[in-house]
Image 1 (cartoon, rainbow, N blue to C red):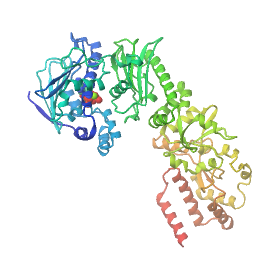
Image 2: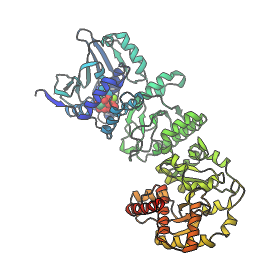
Image 3: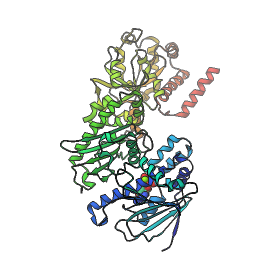
Image 4: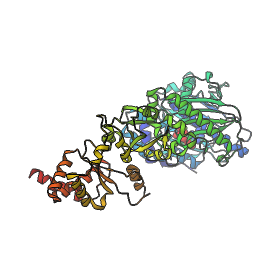
Length: 621
Ligand code: ADP
Ligand code: MG
């Protein structure tokens, strides 16, 4: 068989372009990436060999060898790991298999010079391509463990690559980097030793440099070392390795559990939001090891879905080494570990919460995920309620439920919230006017999960959660800041002209609304739509409608503000001369306005347009 040439997939070409030209300020990290891949390959084979020992045969000592050829100007990174078949070479090095990648690269290309966004790239397995920062050509010679064939993949990183049979006889992979002019520093043993020490010391497999016997790294699992024995730099580098991340972690959690089950945990809360945080599969990023042997990235149940942003390693002493990945599901030891992990992480998050700024950053990244725990994990609800934070009408800073309850007004029984898409816009919603006039704080909820947990949780410290769209009755009982309650006003409700107006509005809108009432919540706006006490919250209903969970929306109560100039004028007209076309137009326009402010679509945009025009014509008139 001879050489086959193939083009890179389009997204790989674009990625290569970005990597080579603008990605990393420090080219030396290409070595870290290649070592990281070699280490992963050894981990994979060690796992496969648990059930198929013939795959490793005699050769069970895993190692990564780095050799320098000054004459040929090459650097070779060899491992005796799992290796790749011809198909795997093509699949792994010629495409980027992960979902969402193409969209991501588009985004990246647009943000080329913004280092922050560019950091995200590690999550996409760009790792290998980093070699092209220093290489004019890269060759990957590989033999899959258990296979009788070897293959060589070769590319100059410019659009295509070639694959051909290779004479290599041992299993594993040699990555041969043909250095570009000017990159001679990577032919210097001491320079390489320094780079390995800096980025790869935590790699648990020995890295043998240029034929030396003593490894250039410590070659012991970092998570098994005692805390005093690990420097902050080493923790950070290990994070970069396990999380495929480049930024500093927000939190490093390293502990050893003893007792009924023994395990070591080294977990990180990332400093940035992973791109697939809201992937419907909700998979976590914690690797499971058993006695230093890598078992799987995807141990279901090892970490609750609402902590899926965690990265790192759990290494169990008790699980059997031959545990199959499938057997892990519903394994009682795994559930036991999950509880321990959860307790530990929640404890450390509670400590992080003492530092307002750092916690705000964490919250911004992962708060929405943590809140999923509020409704799906009753066991940890109490702890989670202490950790949740909100935007509120009280000011810019995030507030806790404890803060909120501490500021509740006399006579206030519920924790009020409003759901919507955008906190700034919510803060201006007419529903809040009656709360403002009473100095009552309202939580501004903008996440999809916020539509669900308040009902599931019910209450915090016996204060029920209540949507402002259903707060009418309670609001009426609380004093406004100028000292009045609305009870008295309510009694004078629908008399005189206002009664005529209400009758007219009811007649005009007919079945469009459930009822028409005077409002005690509005101060500045003429009208708003509210849900009846027992009805579903407006925002939640919209969400359910979008997801086809409900077909016919429930009708709303149309509230009008008896103090608003426009309403008073309308009432005067209604009292004096009853119905008119002009008054009808205004009533319909007010209903549409209320819908628009709630973020709803207009039922009939062209009718809306006609009415606006006729009202405008009269105004100029
Ligand atoms: P990542 O390591 O994040 O998956 P890389 O770009 O570093 O992404 O590598 C792409 C893929 O190529 C790896 O997932 C792996 O399947 C394969 N690969 C790279 N280097 C090796 C190696 N030395 N041995 C076996 N497979 C490798
Ligand atoms: Mg990699």
